Length: 108
Image (cartoon, rainbow, N blue to C red; front, side, top):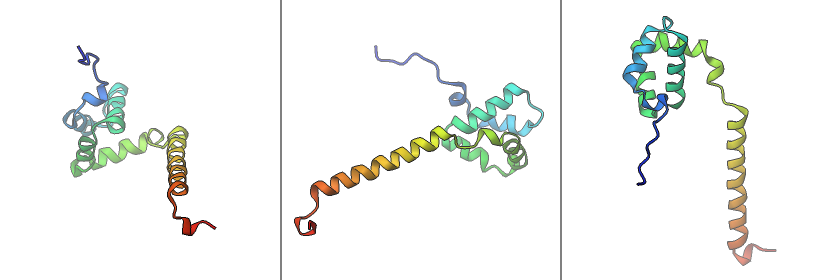
């Protein structure tokens, strides 16, 4: 009844083994396979991505891939704006809480 029936995105289904295989063959991969690598690195499970990026055997191919696709790994304006807005909202909330509970001795 409440079961989710939609499939996950391919990047979330890809595990480290297929991603490592694709990276091992880089740059001899198709454009579609390069997009799969990119999706895995950007949206894959953090543990899997960390294990792949820490693999010394894949380091030359990974460095080459990262250099070739550097523009895809930059932080976007929207992501930066969201982080700045969240920090600002947190600081405003802290200030409002402080104003509500500060001791009377500090009020002048």
